[in-house]
Length: 540
Image (tube, rainbow, N blue to C red; front, side):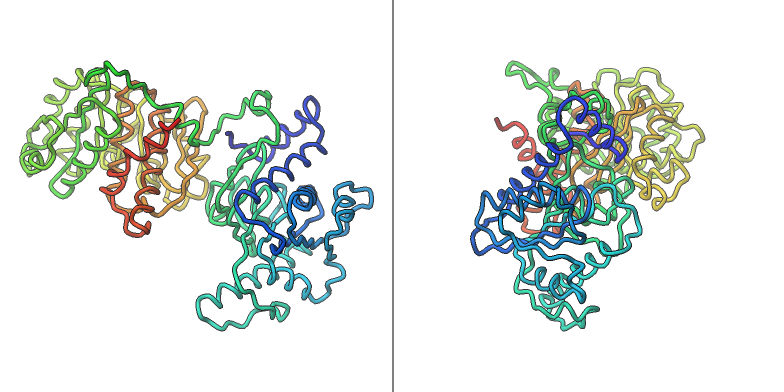
């Protein structure tokens, strides 16, 4: 699946209309796809009350088609609230009238009480007010209707919290008995699908179905907070359509991640599956060594060697049985400058090199890193955490990196590398990631919700995960080890970063489910769940 801007989607639709199917057929396909999604997600019976909020444009047209489809395939009680009258020649509007569905016009609902009752009594609400073409701030009937609907939903939320709150509109006096399931068509109304900006009264969806491709704003906060579970329907437009095929941003879904898994020949051995060297650790961050090294092994790597200060190796080796060890010269417990020669002497035998997890920020370690990167015989390189912080002290630091290096910063670390604040980076994550990957000629994985992976040749991927299960110290070390392990098994830099990020996030969700709460997940839980995350991708 691809991620396309609003202008790209318009071009794709126009191209499809010229060669594949009419706009009318696209709308029919879109409404049918939304109907099918709702029926998969919800048990719908004759007692189910579904309220449609129908806007005046194409998004409202999708909603009308969906309502008609549901009327034909279910016995639900379907009610439509139209923000503006539809043209009498509108076939989709005539279809819902022929179905005998209840239709309320906003122009006749002067005080909003009818809308309030439709919201308060609904088991399901379909948001078909505004699509990807919405421009902020919202005004007029759309803004008014969304505010009233959100006020009514807020009344229920306040009730469930045990609070008796006075609502801003007396029209919301109807009392909801349960929170309805909310489905947004194409996007929650009031989202800028390019930037991720949101209007004041956006209604948070439980699920969003979007069409043809994902939109950048659906993966960008604050908008991503309102999307819920995202499903993309191609509405019959094939990826081979040139205008869609040339879009360079993709979503790393399960299908793509599965296709990236390295081969596991039954007659393989530890050399077959890659040898990884992990340079990590300092007196304050000993655990990072274990997390990164074990994660590299759990990726399927055949051999992992830990290169760390001699004293740290002596402390941790007894509890970490699988790796081999390269004890390094130390200075005050950290890796010494002279250790670069020891690593360079050995590293040519390895298929990937990870540097940075828990490395510390001492000047002697900075000098070690400079010496290491001065070598012209390094294997494929992954840089994380303190390696990035140390590099940020040098101007033109990227000039010392070998081709196809992977860096894995969070916004704070990327801020130190760029001079931008984390807030500035998060305000335009897509553009910053693309620009940095291009300028520095490397693969950049920008951590966060949603994680982005960018390459210097303009390809980009986004991970479809947003979870607080990974918001704890040490999970970044697990991710870095995974990526290095996959890189050592022969994947290219882009695919190593994409697959590693997918498996890492999946493991976080698995760990949260196992514990019963994302709140209690720690890095070792994510590490323990990697096997199940890989198994899900390997399943036929």
